[in-house]
Image (cartoon, rainbow, N blue to C red; front, top):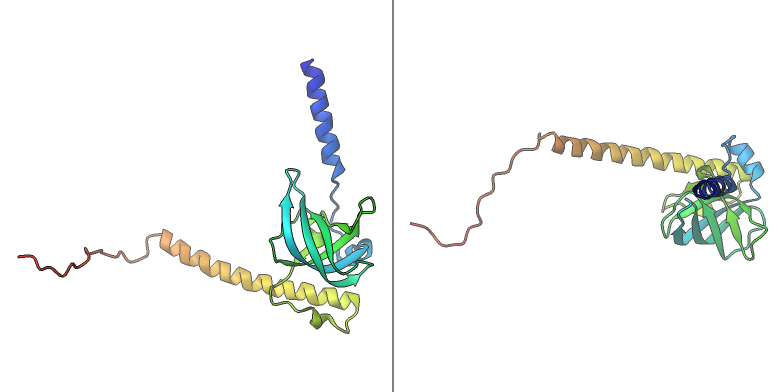
Length: 179
């Protein structure tokens, strides 16, 4: 009986694990070609499941490719965004669902955008130029973020290595003189 239960559990795990087949990144051109829909969305709310896939309620800001309708949609991904974050999504419409449900399971299908990113900067550009612009913008953001993080790391490392001058604390003055 224990052996049969063990086999059932293992089989269920294998089936569940193979249900979410993640692809391999083959380059941006291939990703653009393989994605039915490419869009910029703003995340409204996120929920995360134990299987490592997050369901994010989002609203469409801009459609770069596909037939996405403006308004609310659901994005399913292994990338876990935060509320209010704007993302470039390389997605595929889930045809078995009602409503706008888009799958972007692999992490490389989701590109976070800077809070100051403006979609009007994409006007008049071809799809590949738009994507290049967004990726260059993200790369610049990451470079700046890494520089800030490195400065913080050095500052914290200095503090942890006891190179910080010791402050001698004196009891606060009460205004009463002692004799």
